[in-house]
Length: 165
Image (cartoon, rainbow, N blue to C red; front, side, top):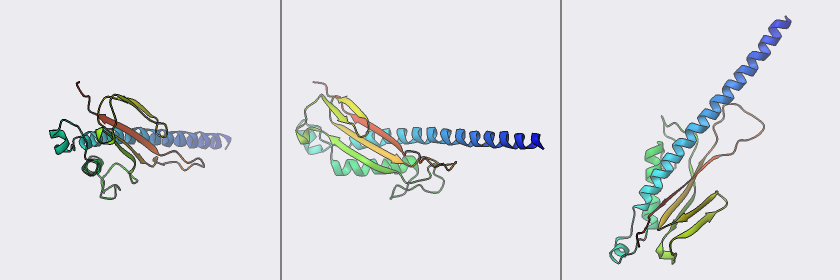
């Protein structure tokens, strides 16, 4: 009987460890997916240039078009609906939130290069030209319920134009 109790205890520890490992692998996979999708989305958004300003030799990113393109790119690459919630068949389980979308260009009088810093999201980068900066977030996958709530997966991305002057 003593042997059975010990074996059951070891089996429970093994199963708990196994689920913990699966949860960590899921976190790694989701973070990688979010990072790739965010990189592609800020790249797509940075292509939405104001053509009238471009004719005058200035690179100015159209904010409304850039944001719409950013959202559309996230939806396409992550399998999301219009509210950024996962569609059936998507690898994600919870809604993706856009928690920061920032455009730094000549329209606000910025000069380049400049140090862009956002301590809240851990972004510090010398940007060489007009840039799109975005941070997206989704909930941590939960396979094992614990008293400590895991932090959400937060992923920043920066896309810049390097000006040749």
